[in-house]
Length: 393
Image (cartoon, rainbow, N blue to C red; front, side, top):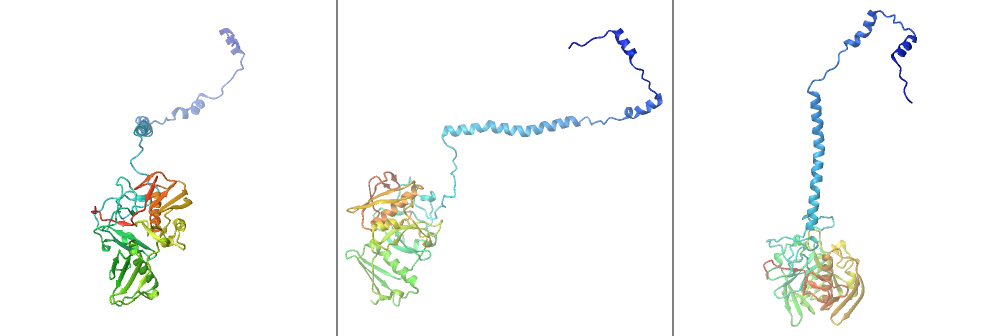
């Protein structure tokens, strides 16, 4: 709508027609009423305050913004470098599943515990043989058993007997049993005479020999039997120096010990604690069969510090023999790692050996692991739990 405009004459006439307004205040009253507003002082700021506030605000913005800009500018460069090299970090990822490092060095490496470092301590040993490029813990020896000696020790709490194979130049006194998680039934006063041709052995005890306690007597007898087990004996005679029978506590007065019945054992894992070395340990079976042996190898016996050597996810579907070859068919899930598979293979090989087999066919396996080509027949080892001097050939 267009606004109406008025001429000067029209405006004058309009103003004349407005009502008359009279102000009855005197000039003095009017002055007093407006004086306070006229004299009110205005608050003034120091001349430096406003520039200072502005500077502080600018600095605060810079503190917040500059690091964000810097990080966003550099982050893509690191990611790009990772993509180009195909590597993310040189630092290994550590998880709770990683077991601790072993205290005994393995020539073949540290197995599940990771690679170990060389040590010149006389109480630290390496296993018999390995491919130095593979970091695995191998628990058997395939080398000829010439110039080796056999020893047997008990678990730390005398719960099981562990046979060991000592390499050239090593004696029983060279082994730190505490570091290995083992204890000793002292056989130093006994004399062992082995006749390989007749497959017999004689163990000579000192005069007036006695043993106290049923556990000590049992472990003594089992230690002697397992020390002599690799000799494949048919007879073990025992006597004192004057030819008398030996007082073996709850066993009574004896002049004979039974050799190990090879077909009544299976090998599982003994480890006293996580910082101790692992060993293959024989456990006795109720029935002497390879089928029972393989199933017993899946059983954990934690109260004796024994664990299964065959993982629970392995199910044997067919166990057959072809002469001196043990043929195994089984189903399995994913291996925890290569060490788990290698430990199972070596435990089965030693169990097959003690049951009279010379080779094993692992039907479902076609890969190579550690010392073994699993696509063909695998020869059983010569001995278990080798302890070799670092300086031995």
